[in-house]
Length: 296
Image (cartoon, rainbow, N blue to C red):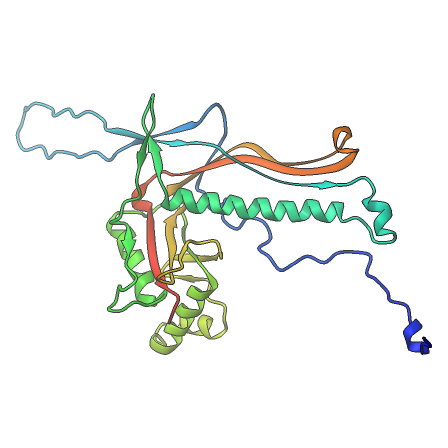
């Protein structure tokens, strides 16, 4: 069959690879306010509880002695990895296309960062552990929560919900450390819309919302992550407000990547990245969940 000149035009293939849109690395690891090196099977953080002073009402009376009250929290390490096996003859089969080995290492680092963020989220709102010889589970305090219908109806993140979180922290004297709220893109959109529609009197927040540059409110810094838990049945996402001093981190093994040729795999190239770290909720009063409806 005869062909035309355009049928003979060559096709040029790119010799590199482009990365997919993604969260690049960890956004939450640096938010922990208590950081220790990881050693042994686990780390125990000792906590001394607040004391009560007594007024002196009589001369020469007896001194009132009271024992200290202590608690602790246990931090266990968690490990994660990402690996790929590159068969021996891939290089020859790709011809001029360069094997993405160095890029693969970068992609693995991004993936490790995202799973580390999931460790942070589960530590903030999941089970904590305490005890001495046999650690016991401490469930998340259900009183440390702002309901999805706070303010009258099921809504997303609002100016009023952020104000309530600030009030709850002030009531519990949570005044040390930096304050953060973990949100998804939908919560930031809902909050911007709420401020623009109902809170023009808050000039700085109003102008920031209009510019799409709302970074903080009531002393909270917003940190966006799409990894927060979402109930697919109710379309409610659980956002988290917390003080940095309520979150502890310990690292046993920093992220490390190895490349090795494996004779038992026909000399395929193995690329593997791994790390071992852990997070723990130290103070329950320093963490608040905020339920946000994403359906409106």
